[in-house]
Image 1 (spheres, rainbow, N blue to C red):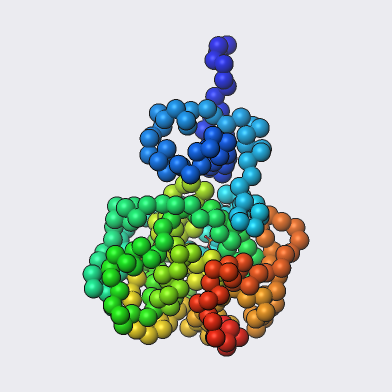
Image 2: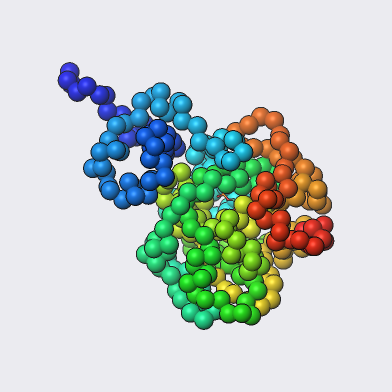
Length: 317
Ligand SMILES: Nc1nc2c(c(=O)[nH]1)N[C@H]1C(S)=C(S)[C@@H](COP(=O)(O)O)O[C@H]1N2
Ligand SMILES: [Mo]
């Protein structure tokens, strides 16, 4: 029998969610939560990382968003996905995405900018990673709370120096029929495209996400880099981005092209404006039994309502 005082937990028994929560709670308890990135940089030999979480640590872990809603389970976030380039079957996306090649990868930023540039993964890493716990509300009526890692899109846009004439930002997903079996479907105008007004793109809540739950981004969630705009319906948060273009006109987007009467360019979460085929007044939080009311701008009205002052939100849906 081993004389070790502690029983090692096999790493295969610890899920990323447990690791994430236990480390986070440990640092919180030690008053070190704000130093997460600096400590992580010290590497695995760092003493503060040493104690393995006890089962009690894992049970009491309770990270929430700013509304005190618990995080959605890692397993739900990574096995219930919309990523039509793989399949329209949410439960099968993660299976088809397993071997998705996310390296090497480049994001070309062009258009109305003074310093057009192509960023590789090392360039993106230099923008850093901060945690943002955001609600994600799909236009279909379900939602999650996701702890993203990423950096403000504004940081990348400032690096390319937008021209005064730039007013919109267009985004494009990888267009690779070999890796994306869903591209054989002729029902959609591939590649997946999205767009924002420049002031929306520069808002601090808007991030480029490169991970979640303290881990690198899983392919099914849009690796290696995807947009997250938490006050808009989930389809605006385009995955696996390869191209960003600054424009002086509002770009076409996949969903507003497919069904312009159902999906507008703005797509701000709004419980008062129903989808033509269903109500948007409530939502099903994944992992919960009963529905909950949907909040104006997905609960971010205080931060973003000013962007739409004077606009008719029923017409600009
Ligand atoms: N390229 C691409 N991006 C996409 C989609 C997609 O099908 N393709 N689906 C969107 C929709 S409808 C939602 S709700 C979110 C889902 O993100 P998640 O799977 O990380 O929860 O991704 C959005 N981004
Ligand atoms: Mo969605």
